[in-house]
Amino acid sequence: MNPDSSPYAFSGHFPVYRGRIVSDILLCSPEAGNPNAIRIRALWDTGCNNSILSKRAADFLMLKPSGERSFRTPFGGSRMKEMTEAEICIVLGGCRILLNVGIDDSPNSDPDCDITLGLDFITQGDFAITHDGLQLVLSFCYPPIGCPTDYTILAPKLFNGVVLTESCEINECDAVESRRRGLIMMDYYEELAQVNNQK
Image (cartoon, rainbow, N blue to C red):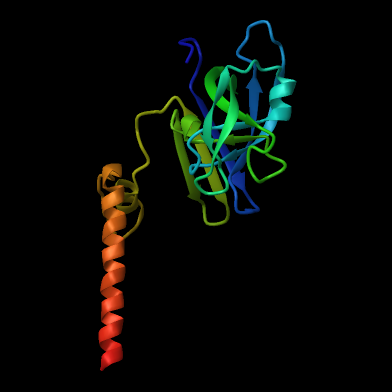
């Protein structure tokens, strides 16, 4: 972030929710001599590791490819795909965030969204999805303000009465162990069903 730039905060409200988190976003080329900029519809996808830009938007910005690498597609499960990689600037107020993105004809399954914003972008700021009782609210702040949204702290202060809270450290190293435990639990239920059938 440029030290002269002010932090940027964005809030989007969804009076009609169609099962996706989207917003408009401003992109430009990282090259100083390239004046092209474009405002496009972005799909925010926390299940996607890397951001992917449509080829038509990349062509408009006259991006220069920096090579190819494998990207996990935001749809199609764990399918990997070779894509051209390029650098873009995401413009947030006075801030410009450099980001390496994959270039693909279909960056997601929504034809009106020319970019999928993955965790490589989302985790550079503070990101929250909340609800005000009537509509969904998307909020994003860059850079992070250093005060994460923690409902185990907020909920007891906002609700009158007892609030059951649980806080834990989520260890991704345990993902394989968790899957194994899940299979053991399935075996237990299968054994229980067999015992009940024998009665």
